[in-house]
Structure formats: C-alpha cells, structure tokens
Length: 130
Image 1: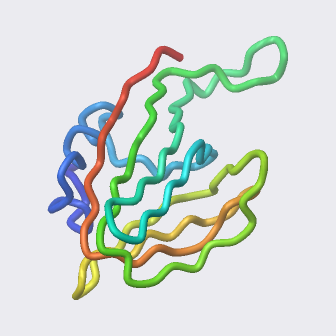
Image 2 (image 1 turned 180 degrees about the horizontal axis):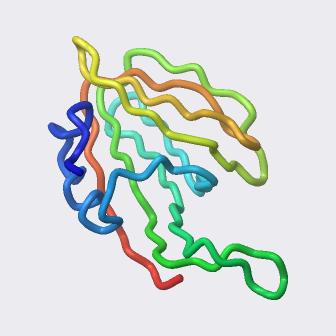
C-alpha cells in the first residue's frame, strides 16, 4: 500500500504513514486541542491509536501504537464546526484535495464535528508509548 494521492503533497504525511505502516482513518481518535488563529497557522491535535485487536480484562482494546498527530492548518477560507465537548472522539478524519488546497472533514462519534477548508496543511507526528 502507498500513501493516498489526496495527502501525498502534505508535508509530514509520509512520516505519519511510516509510523503506522498505513494511512490511518483516525477511527476513535480523540481531538485533544483545537486552536484557531485568524492571522497565523491554526492547529488541530489528535490522539490517534492503533490497537492489537485484543481486549484486556477490563474490556478495553489493547493498544499497539499511539501518536499525537498535529495538523497545522494555514489559510482557512471556511469552517463549520460544532459539538465541541469535554471529550471529542471522531469516527474518521477525511482529507480531500481541492482546487484551492484541502478540505478536512471531522466525522463525529462524540463531540467535535465539521469541516475546515484551507489553502495549506502540514502534519507533525509525535509517537507515544501505548
């Protein structure tokens, strides 16, 4: 499998792909920080987990790899966000290439959901121990 075309031009996308060994869907990832700046870069930080498929004694999925993924977002031209809460778990994060940049869609599970339309995105990956 290779890096999806939609994200191939994003700085840091290859590092994210390499850490997980695939492009994550961000299923059950938690948005831990959202910072919006009208005159500079904005950021979206997401705790992303890969599980082993096993369940522990308490019924929780056993983690294999964790990383905080920071999306640095520049040139926001439109956004529609709602549902920000004390916990913000997404079902999926989708990134689409558009004629003017990128459209990030946060598909809801619990809490924050919506879209961010921007001219540029870059990604920083901070691996963590599970």
